[in-house]
Image: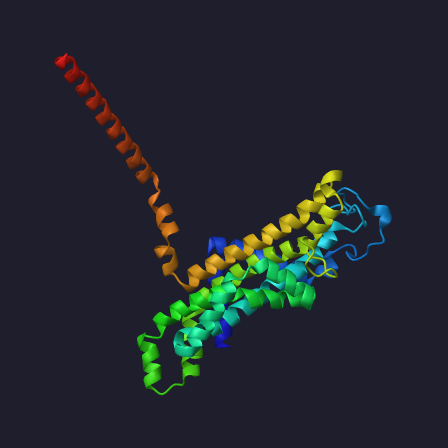
Length: 331
């Protein structure tokens, strides 16, 4: 009950933030579309037998038109594509946060052989070219979107683990951690109950931003033909549009629909992730160099810049006049 009350308070703080409210509304809308897709979509998006209806422009009967090659309703495909994009993005983001946090905390707190082993694995994986490895793994393991999630998690935890490790090296010398160790708490207890909560602000932002990035990555893989061929996703819609000659025949609606879906999903998760970071770590906004730059660029700063420019111009005019007089005297 206490955790649910704390979660509710956290949601209220996000809602009170202007950017957080926008992100929360957009993410909630995408989730509702994914959950109620069978009731929202007017047609079966997997029905490829509607040859008579292929290539239709947007109308009241087909809000976003139909595909040129198979006659599938693009609006229905867009709705069902939300499911795959959200499942792949959110599931991968949560799993990456879980794996990266556990390994990062273990490396930073335990040190020694454990730290060396995990960091050497991180170093090796960071230098391996990702795209060729993904191509090989999808051809070997299959192209089911659950396999794609597994590949994203296996390749995506390294950066977060290194960041968490750096933070843990600071947290493990704090007073409350030393007090827990002196009280006889086990290493596992200290890592889970005392150190891991201290990294929560990084995990929150990483989950949201990783979800947004993986949605783009999944769309890119599907566009290259490496996605699940049996599931409709936004990237597969773009690939089908390219293969079907959407640009050649002027079927702009076939390209605009999945592109807009990808943009809205990535934008909403990024907005939500940044706001969550500001709430979990209030010092971020005050210490952010970007925030300081924009804070200093107010009207007074601009006025001072122009005044200084005028002063330099006047000095230049005086020096030029003085130089001319001196030259005339010497002559």
